[in-house]
Image: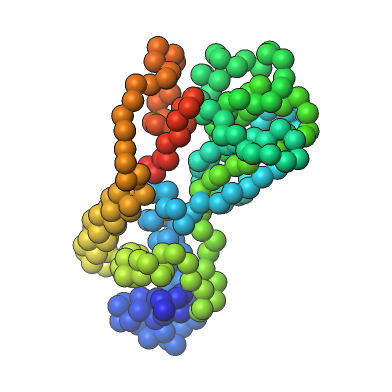
Length: 238
């Protein structure tokens, strides 16, 4: 089973280094592996392995809520439940301009019906009127760094060959061999693009329909397809 220890040995072997030569080199290889997973893989695409769910209660009169984790990359869906039990209802997602136009902060507070991103936080409108409303946030979180030889995650288990190639390329750059770095990096990027496309196809509904927008004629957002009034779309940005 590919893990941090075996990947580190492979990377050092590719760089014609012996793992026992130096603690510094082992640490570098581990850094390249973790950098590969977070930067090369997870900044380009929202993998389903990055999905996480958090829930908190609202604060009466507070419309702005920080992302639930320091590792949160983006918010997928916000839903609310009015009270301690019952079903969560997904909120409509808007741009900040849309939210200001349709649900301005001057409107009497109540149960939120829409949300938008604001930096590394999200805004709810109408402003929650009580602290009894439960918020559920479904997000994409960056993976935690791998620590310890036995450490694994989705990318070491499913894409270990690509992790090895990217980390080896970073090693060539560290050694000053920019020609090998560029060649291997480009090959790895090309293969990663193909795997992203295939994973995106895997996550699409088997039955897809096209329908007119329920928001035709209203201010639109430039962020791409999100959650409409009555329809829910999963977003996996390449």
